[in-house]
Length: 328
Image 1 (spheres, rainbow, N blue to C red):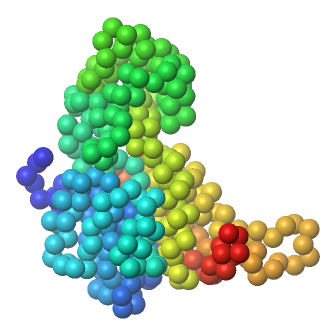
Image 2 (image 1 turned 120 degrees about the horizontal axis):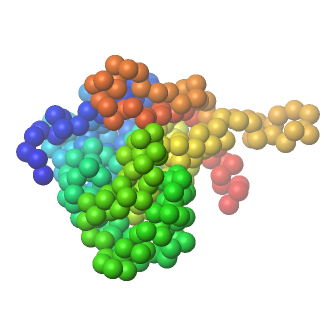
Image 3 (image 1 turned 180 degrees about the vertical axis):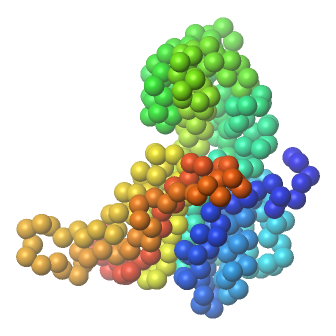
C-alpha cells in the first residue's frame, strides 16, 4: 500500500454536484447521511464539511478502504461511523445502530480508486497481479476461481452479459483450452490471451481488449448487479419525505437498474382504465436530474475516472409506509 495521504490518492467524482444535490436534505439537527460505497471517503468528507449537523455512516465491504477512510475522516470525530458490510445490507446496518431512516444516501458504484491503484488486488489489466478482484478479500471466489472452474457456457454468458463483449464465445473457448494446460493465476497471462484472441481491428476501434473481460469478471466475483438490484429499493425504503438519493454509475448495466428503479417511483402506478388517480397510485419520488448527468470537460481533465460517469438523483415526496405494510 502506498504511503501517500488518502486525500492525495483519491479525487471523488462530481463531489461538488453531490453536495449540491444531497445537502438540502441534511440541514436538520441529527440528520443522517449514508455513503453506501465509502471507498476512500472523499464524498463523505465533502458532505460532512458542508453539513455541520449531519452524521455520516460509511459502508464498504473492503476493509482496507474502511481503514483509509477512517484516517481521512478522523477530524470529524464521532460524526463518522464506519461499517463493514455490503451495500444491500444498509437497512440492517442502520437498524443495528438504532437508526431508522437516512436523510440522504449516496452510491458511487463500481471499482474504487483504491482497488484500481493497488496492483496486488488484480483489478487493473495494465498491471500484472494475482487474479483476485474481490472487493472483500476475506470471502468469496476470486477471478482465478471463476476462470478455472466455470463451465464454458457460464464463462461465455458472463463475458456477454456483464462485459458486453462481442467475442464472448471466442474468448471463453480460448480460456477453457488454456486452463486445461495450466490454471490461470495472474492477470498478465489473461491479458496476453485477450490480445491474441480479440481481433486486431476491434482492438484498434474498441479500446484495450481486456477492458470488457475484466469488467465482467469483477462483476461476477462481487455479484455487483444482483447486489445493486437489491440495494436500490432497500435504500429508497429508508428515505423519509424530503430525503434524497444520488447514484454514480460507470457502465450501462448499473445505470439501467438505477434508471428503472428511480423511474418506477417517479411514475404514477394508476391503471390506465381508472378515471382519476387515487392517492396510493401517485408518484412518491421526484427526479432531481434530467436523465443521466455526465461530467463536464473540466471535471474529466481533473479526474479522468469521471469520463464514463452517469449521475442520477431523486427526492422522496410521499410516505409509502402504509402501502408497504399492506402489501405484506
